[in-house]
Image (cartoon, rainbow, N blue to C red):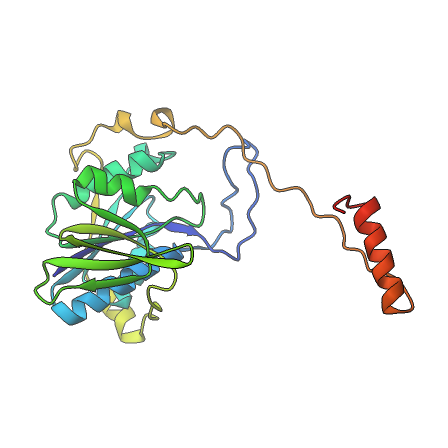
Length: 264
């Protein structure tokens, strides 16, 4: 079974995010970049299926040269080879353009399943997976927390949590799955895995290599425009309710909720 795992590099969730002077981007100085956490679930699931059925896991990432670090992390986890789509014209591309570039790269590969994270923790759009499946012309299943491939490797059954219930869907392969928290627990890269990753193939592709027109990518080609980024308003300091007894504190709390918060 051949599996493709799409990967995005995002700021570490513990990084302090600041809006840049253009009010349309963030300050990237001193930011630690990591593999998107939801993509980690996809990589782990791909590795587990390879261990069961055999085959190869290929990791495909898009972005600047630094994305190589995250691809190498996936290779150290156990993926077999990687591909980085790197082109200056990609800078500022929206989700639709990203999916188009990923699809062009994946179409040249053999695959049974494609995994991506259900969303990126940076822009939180959550549409690349669906767009990618549309470009590839294959079924897609979003926000999945369980994947079962048939013993003959020709179909897949997935679980999607919905309000109070679980939706079970089945499809022939190939198909695309967007991974959700709960699908698995991603493994850590071992020291031998890290050493082996340095020797695993990692191919770099430009838009021209993929037969794509650079004019369809970048800031000028965006369908969704970023008008302005604004940080959330600062929270007001909390207030401690005073009183000698529980009854006095309850009365004071009710007064504050009525007169200041105006919610009762």
